[in-house]
Image (cartoon, rainbow, N blue to C red; front, top):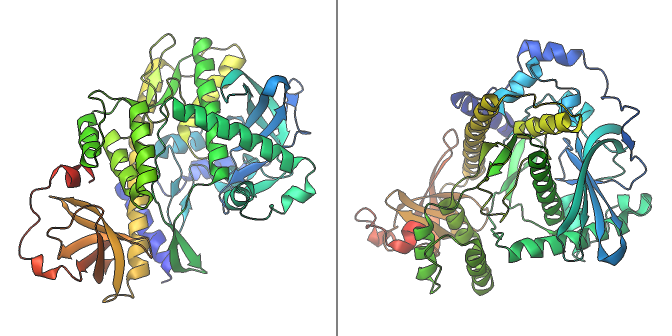
Length: 504
């Protein structure tokens, strides 16, 4: 069995264990067979096909949810439009396709295979904003001030055409002056200048959010690279100027959509990250490196601490980020009634926030899309408050299931890659030390495993040489021993101190 087939088999079992459905039911496939073409535009929709639209996504992404275009205005203002694929136009509420999407609520991304929320005939075809093809879309039309703030916004439906399918890596290196321009820039008049304009707005918007307390966290999620069907390496997927550009405009579009629905007295599904309950442990973490944070949660103070640590110890920042991410907790979905006081998103420093820009991949975005279309048409909500409350709960639960499957499969891929290297030594860094165990991340390949021998006295952040002694691909286990610390392996880990506990 090939590496890819083995990982796909494990992934399917992992999904089923979590209650996720890896395959589409027959009724959904029957509905799919009847969908022969993309949704057609209506005469009342705006025709925006002439704009210099472009998508920027991962190199291998085919499910294109959004495209962007910018336009300079006076007084340093810039108009940015984000067009989002109108998935609801083909996937109707209550259909079998919709029921399957509502069950899984998200696409599941594993190293060997993507298990899409919607069939690829739709998600990478008829509802994807593919290059050179006309599509119906919902547009968030925003005007940014010279300082990066959102001065105004408008929502409407339109017909659009993606002029260029671009990738994060090539666009990011070009924007940073570290690589040549992507090939499509030469063939689409005005695209290079448009992307430069978008980048300048995104950088100002990011700076403003940072000033307000948006957290600049960086974590590593290595991506498995295949040669044919054999796993060849793990490659870190770092942020760059292009990922930042898209992130800023998606955050802005999601914020504007939440505010718009509230202003129209519509209920909404919010993306919420509450004030950290483990703030005291974050304070203790800062104290261990000589920093002082206020006693009560303060995003501005936390971001200041993070930026200082990024500058002081850049080699340890990803591990610090991971520790803070774990202590902050997970975001969730929540139904919000008009006139309420949403808890907001602590890490983004935003009060009003929804998920609305990835409807091919996430069901909450489909829900928001339907609420938005109803509001634009002057209709009441297509869902009752009770339905939205239950759907928000389910989306939160299913997202966690998908995250656990994806994490397990990243570990299985790493175990498979290392399975032929038993007995070899590697350099790494300690990433966790607690009563649950001691963990090390290798520098190359960037895989993480557990130290079973020689861990006493090691602290988070310590450099260590380790020897690989065991892998379990099915369960994603990787076991090491510390090469120069074996003499200390005569007992279990001591009780963790404040630093090691909070970093785990």
